[in-house]
Image (cartoon, rainbow, N blue to C red; front, side, top):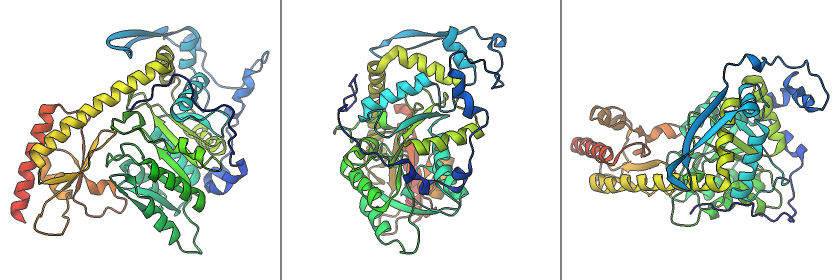
Length: 451
């Protein structure tokens, strides 16, 4: 299923109760509470007052920038066989070459907010705002720094995106693993952790999850599981970090489940979801553009972090993305993402066909409905109940046999033994997939012979 609405489809007359700003004070880390506004960037908005002559910022004079224009060709979403030319010059280019607002270019923020209205039915006055970052990873790191103190307990789905494990390790967090299965995060596992929490010990303040096409498992959480997690967030008072880079890479046959960001409208109040989106999988990974949507008090402290660490996301990358997105419009964007999801759906089918051909009886898996990964369990010892371990086989023996993949232990916060493997199907051709899985078949059969 794809999103095709060109206009926001939320009810502008509905009343949405928002959590008050003071609610979030207890969620902020010590570092976030101590962080002060930049003495220069905090005053940038004052330059917008008509008639003001500003000596404020040390901005270089754009007359000395050598770039006069940028022009590029892009796919025409309505007709992929054709291309369209996009140009960047004049005042639009000047904005892209200069320092800009910490939270991102205002026009790009406005475009993304319109996208969230259409994709998640969230009105602009319903308790959230948006900031742009240097990829969603940048924003996730800043959110973790803003919400987690050294040694804090955190809730993490498991297996989990390997990129966040070092974030929590660096803070020496207690990582409480929430189980997942073919229907996504197991809400009963989350409930069990929280209901059996020591009475005198503060409960975790955040839960991290990738709900669509989860990296590494490829699983998409059902709408029932999402609703249960939202109810637990309200009952046990934690925030949901919804990391969703594969939202537009959904190719399942069933209706696309609503995001946490949308579903929280069903709750008595909104403001417990911090949503992370990315252009990396749909426009360009190298542009490094992501955006976060969520409660203003949290985004304010994330922006303070940005102002201190990297000042702002790249103005030029934002301007290039904005020029393309404004030329496409929302209909063009959705047409493009439909093509993207179909592309990866076909890649998934090719990979699964090859899995059945070469690894039938040697591995087990569930079919992913989004993303770009297969998560499969190697059946290394069929005559034993012992699961086995994929680590040495994948890291050494499979690589020596000409196949490079990742052992499942990489995605487990406690690094325990597992027979699972993650394989990305995004780049390889059908011929390469078949050759690689045939090579892996040989390695597994040799391993079985040793057992």
